[in-house]
Length: 76
Image (cartoon, rainbow, N blue to C red; front, side):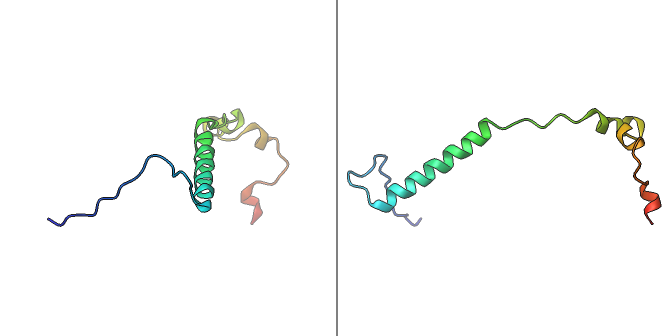
């Protein structure tokens, strides 16, 4: 069984981090916070208007029945 090299990860930051590391960590942190904010503050699905529901129930919504726009069958 081949042995894999052990990768050690220090949970503490370096005493003197490199400039790029600070920038990278800041970007990762901001991205994570934005992601969590979008998840936690997500709006539920909007309420379906009653007119849209009536299409399923009645066949023709009231706003379409009173419309002066020609029916799709007469568009040809």
